[in-house]
Amino acid sequence: MHDLELEQLDVKTAFLHRELEEDIYMQQPEGFTILEKKDYVCLLKKSLYGLKQLPRQWYKRFGSFMTSHDFKRSSFDSCVYFKKNSDGSFVYLLIDVDDMLIAAKDKGEIRKVKSQLSEEFKMKDLRPEKKILGMEILRDRKTNKLYLHQNGYIEKVLCRFNMQSVKPVSTPLAARFRLSSALSPQSDNEIEYMSHVPYSSAVGSLMYAMVCSRPDLSYAVSTVSRYMTNLDKEHWKVVRWILRYLRGTTDVCLQFGRTEDGVIGYVDADFARDLDRRISLTGYVFTIGGCAISWKAILQTTVALSTTEAEYMAITEACKEAIWLKGLFSELNEDLQISTVFCDSQSVIFLTKDQMFHKRTKHIDVRYHFVRDIIARGDIVVSKISTHENLVDMMTKSLPITKFEHC
Image (tube, rainbow, N blue to C red; front, side):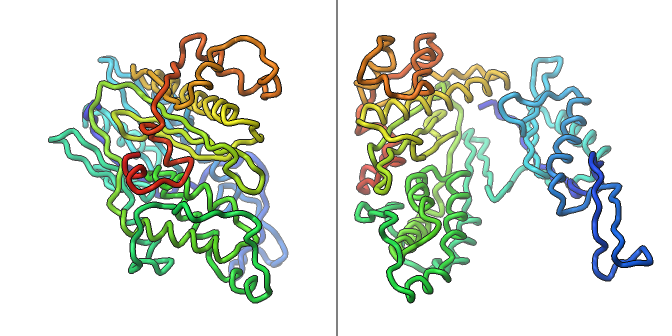
């Protein structure tokens, strides 16, 4: 939106040589005896790879270094640091373990931050951003577009599970699949066969793609991730179906551009979707300029007694995310407003605005009623949208091809 410069850095030895707060003793590795007796142990003076304390010590060290150079850590995301310059411009630094992105209006500001980091840590300068955490970044500055995709990662996943030459399908989950715990192996042969199926590994690979850049996988991945044990061939068939969908959509990506629109949210629920516990499913997505920035498809924690209740619980979850996004944007000096959260249930919208006590809603957990205060204060506006135009439909149910592509 501001055509910022974006460059990438990598810390070579993030976990090595960090100071330790506890006394930690380590057995001597095989073939490495610095003491006369092999059963002696070493008291570590500095950290080594493999210690549980390493990530915490690294983040504490990095955080103290950044704050000493006038950077502030975000109150809403501990991996985001920012600094306001005297001219009013900002420098943003994002870190995930040892991978960093630096964004600023001026390349000189980025070079200055790189120089400061290199004085303290061993850094590898990767120059303009191209790939980070399996996500590839493409920029077309002439048209003010930025694309985020995982083509390379998805191709590796397909090769890993021998699905690179399969026939593609058009949707991530066909309506004919009805998974439940009742579909468990019935014979010893089936149990033996399923024990060699890499189900959990495949679901984990799909989940990473879904979390990073593929909101279209949300509903399908949410479905298969409920059955990690006691699997049947039908469960594995569904995972293979999702991989077939990926085969035909490796070029699908998130496309960001300049826009004057604020953040718009869409929320929906599918009543009693889970066949085992009859729990409803919540789905929401937030967009800027039509491109998704935050999404989720997850089972609700309690059983809803009606469609209205399920939608009410879903709207509460969406408003919690909207409040977090609003805080993050305001902290990063963005005046983007969470203008509207769209819902396709008129009864739920009335319920969120009605402060009266009703016997039909008194059993709903208090934690879900906070949405009424949020809406009454004007922090969030909830509006009606046609079911046909609700984009989040694809995150709560299996859809026909035409509707899925529209979403």
